Length: 96
Figure (spheres, rainbow, N blue to C red):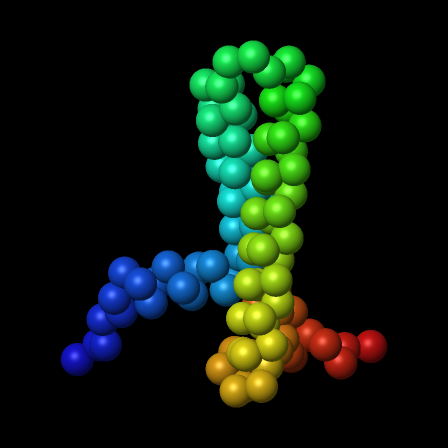
């Protein structure tokens, strides 16, 4: 009988395989949310709102990159993942 994965395990596997895409989506959602939040505050110039949104998204992105680096370090230390990318087939590596 096949082992069924939980939704959490499937999401974790996808995030591990697509780290940069995950960070990019997090940046986009962070800047969108920050712009929406800053637009609700009256009395601020548009340029200040955009600068604040960029700073918030940048901080969120740095935190996400640190998290991705921690996951990569943990996977490397425990040997949880294969270090050869999927698009490189081992039989094609040593062809002349």
